[in-house]
Amino acid sequence: MNPELSQWHTKLNSRCDLMSHPEEHRQALTDGARGLLARGVITPDEWLELCDLVTGAYSFAIEQRAAELFHQSSAYEVFDSDWNKVGTVTRSVLLFSGARWPLLIRYGDEGLLQAFSGPAFNCLSATLQGLALMMENGRRFTLVEVGRYLDGGVFVEAITDPEDFLLVLHAAAAAREDSDLARARHLQQRARVSPFRVCPACRANFAILDECTRCAGLGFIRVTV
Image (cartoon, rainbow, N blue to C red):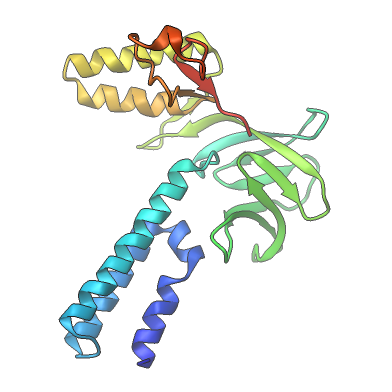
C-alpha cells in the first residue's frame, strides 16, 4: 500500500481522535483523501470508497456519543459505594476530596471514556461505564449529574423532580405547536439535563400511554448508571 494511503488509514482507525473530535476527524480525513486524489495516489472510484469509510466512521462516533450517559460539558458529584460524596467532576476534570491532583476524563486509545492522572494525564486510572467509574484498583464510584453548560455557556442545574421534567416536556411541545422552534430546542436541551428520558416504547403518546409497560404509563423512564 502507498505510504500516504497507509497513513490515511491509520488516522481513520484512530478511535481516540474519532471519538474525541468527530467533526474535525471527518474534515481532516476528507481533506486528506482529496489531497491523495489530486496527487494521483488514488483513483476517483477509490476516492468515493474513502469517502464512504469517512461517513461510516463519523456516523458511528455520533451514534456512540449520543448513547453515552457522560457529558463532557456537565458537572457531577462523585459518590462511593456507601453513597458518601467523595469528589466532583466539572467539564471532564475529576477531583477527589482531599486529593492534590485532578484526573481528566477523556477518550482513550480504544475510543472508550477513561480517567487519566499524571502531569500529562497519560496514566490510566479508571474506566467510565455509563456513569459508573471503575478504578484500576477495583474501587467503584458513581457520578450524579448536577448541572450542564448548554450552548452559549449557560449553566443550568439538573432537573431531578419528575413533575418538573414533565413540565419542561409539555412546554417544549407547546413551543413547537406555536412554531417557536428556538424555544422548543432550548427546552429539549434543558430536558436532557436530568436522569429522565422520554419512554422509548410509547414516546409519551397519550393514545397508548396507559397501556405502556415500559414506563407504567408515566411517559418517561429514569436512566440508570
